[in-house]
Image (cartoon, rainbow, N blue to C red; front, side, top):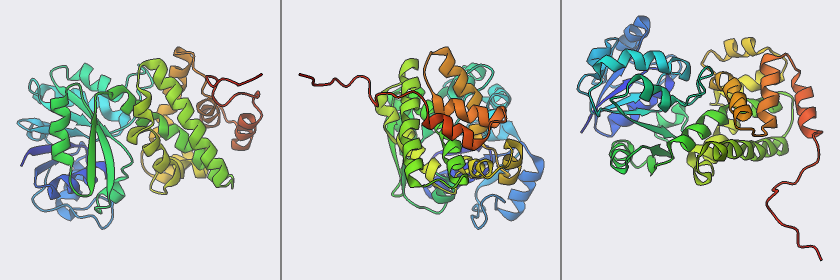
Length: 337
């Protein structure tokens, strides 16, 4: 049994608290919001996860020192836009070599840092890892089977986290490619917005399959330019997470995209979803990375124009369809006589 603290009490934090508690670990949950702490202590239920009850043995606190000090593992589960602020608050209480696994997905717009890079900058004494894959909190909390991947700097740390999370409904693989895992997790949210927009416009399964396939091409193109591994982006944290986020109604990114495709503004869509839509926060960063590394990412570009420049969703799709004719894979040779 390990002492595990989950920093962040949203849907994913709750889902992992349920999973890790059932795995036999001692769980503490931290929230920055006093009203949320009070609600969880009294009702043992998060509003965004109706029907999922937290066991009485799971401690709920708003005291960061209490949550961090002495924990065997810290699970950082706050929305990406709060990662830096939360890591800064954690830092005074994190001891040298203490393990942190980040389970959120995003890229910081100002610095273009991945979330693990932010955490390592703010908590340089920590041993930082990441966990990602096709894993909606709503299904994990109900014990529906899935698989994820842990990325870490050392195999020892990866195997330690793997052992804590793994069970008969949550299979965990390990990988040294932290960058690839994080890029797949962050960029798929932007592609999922595009998939939702297509749904909102009334397009069909063919459209979505095309968006997923070409979206993976864009993600892989950027990932390789930045030093990630293709195998990672073709794996659980790449294509696996991309498929589920583009196809599931649990996906807040897809739901927001549907509303935008139906004619709502970005702000109206985010208000209606009533949860953090990570793809909106990662879209500008993704486009900035594409420009920085001179990578062509037309889907990412059109999503940005719809979100931030007022372009109509229908015009964006038309522009994607009418681009210059291209080869699907430029590296494949022709066998010409």
